Length: 178
Image (cartoon, rainbow, N blue to C red; front, side, top):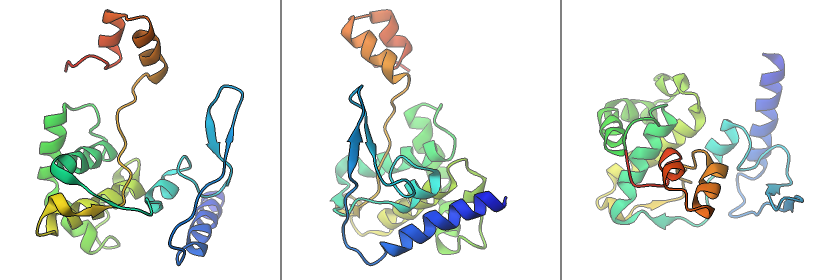
């Protein structure tokens, strides 16, 4: 527990050092396979849940016509419901609106978000969804949150696509099926 607390405090202190900086960039390295990794070791977008929950894009964008749907799907994913169909994820998020409201208004008292595997990302998603729902026109709500998309079996997706493998593409979610 002591080492986890030290790691958490280090990441939080690095984030606090950037608190009043409007925008910053991460320098990256490219390895021999062409994979790109951020150089800063303590706070970056591929780090632990706390880092991903704290970071947001400097330039927000209006969520548009489908944005509210994707916020709900993202929240459901972060709450461990990522194996449900898309419609069921949306329905689950909608059923959780009272919990979202409680957690956003007082996250220290209402700690349901801590039960999620990605608790800090869950809290960030709850805040963004709640703000969008409170907006007079949710389509114009400016979000800075990063929304994750399905990349299941990503390497196999590439092989199935390159080989035009119909059966394999069904198994790795490249085909439009449930």
